[in-house]
Length: 143
Figure 1 (cartoon, rainbow, N blue to C red):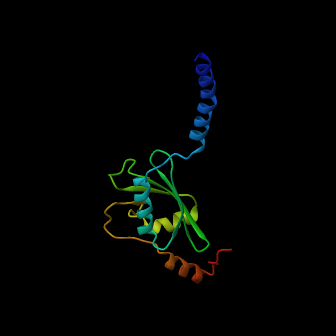
Figure 2: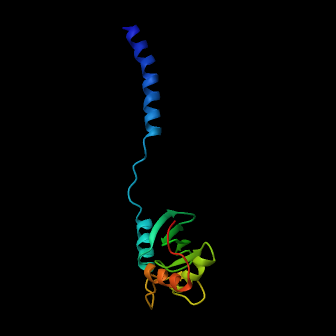
Figure 3: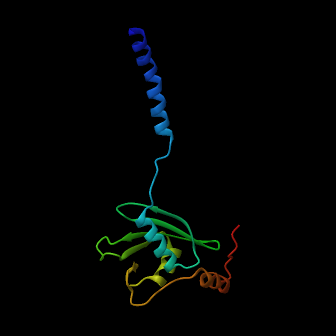
C-alpha cells in the first residue's frame, strides 16, 4: 500500500508539469472588446471605404488606428474623452499627411476632435481621396 502511495506522488509531478505546460501553451479565451468595436465603427463612419489595417488598445484608454486607402495609410491615435465629454474623442495624427486629412474631418476649427454629436457630419471617403490623388498625379496602386 505504501509503495502505491509513493508511486502516485512520483507520477503526480510530471502530470502537474504537463498541466502547467498546457496552460501556458493554450491561448487565453477572450471576449469581444466593446470599446475597440466602438472605435472601429466610429472610424468607419468618419472614413467610409477605408480599410482598417490595425486598431489596437494603446495607452490610458487610447487606441492606435491605421487605415488604408489605395497606397496611402493614415495612422493616428484616437483618445476617447480624456478631458472631453463622454463620447467625444481627441485625434492625434502620426504624420503630416494624417494631420492634413484628419483636419478635414475634425469637428473643431482649432483642435482635432471628433464629437459624439457633431453639428455637421464630416467624413473623408476613400473614393474622394483616390480622386484627389489622381488629380494631383499621385500613384494609387498598391505595389
